Amino acid sequence: MYYLIILCILLIIGYYSSKYLFFVLIGMFLSLYLSFKYIMPIYCNMKKIIV
Figure 1 (cartoon, rainbow, N blue to C red):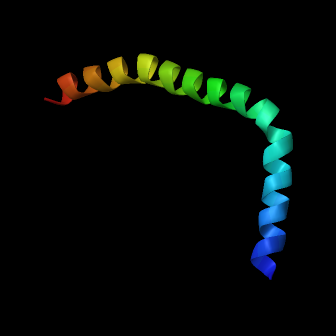
Figure 2 (tube, rainbow, N blue to C red):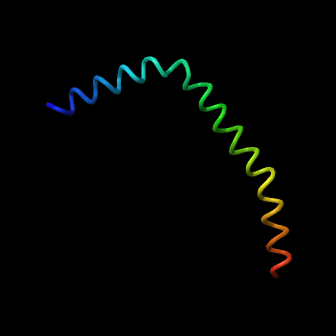
């Protein structure tokens, strides 16, 4: 019985957030891309220094 209520709430939230989900996904991909772009070179340089 509780599962039905939770499911309904999730459906309502999903319906209203579907408009913003696209922007959230773009933001996530951008942040991942930027973090890899700027953190990976630093990480590689640190590995070179250690080795």
